[in-house]
Image (cartoon, rainbow over all chains, first blue to last red; front, top):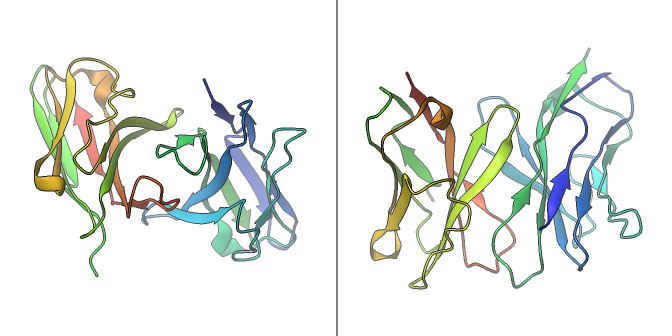
Length: 110
Length: 114
């Protein structure tokens, strides 16, 4: 069965420092990968997906099939980036359900 | 338009009682999902409805959990004979279709079993 691993429960950085939230997956096919974010007292929402190759709020993520990773990066963290981040996988574009990792709490201090 | 709504926002119940959690998806969304969010476990998929197809119940943790979706819209998640380990936030999400990549989440129902 597919699995998504986020090894860090908590990542604490100072404002302006680079951030990398790690995500590894186990699946032998060609999945779609996503990052979802939940800010304090807000709903869980989609941040970005690997297919779009976008930069959202300064965040980027590259799918590395060789390393089965989809790490989320931002060169200069801001306090408003503090949130819970979930990496998610779906088996392919024809599939429906998402498998989520356990999440990483990002805290950005001033 | 309105987003996904869930009720109640909080529910405290005694162990052994049954509870019903409600989800109103975004109008026009044919796909509806239930997840459980608990500390240390992240988001666990519970059940998925797509149109009139048979639901994917593969994530339900036990036969105490069931869900239905009436008229292709509102869904109810029922937990019978609640246990303390059922305490969690139950999230509902909907999407335009099962193939749509973006799921829109509700605010969740926080269930506490005492």
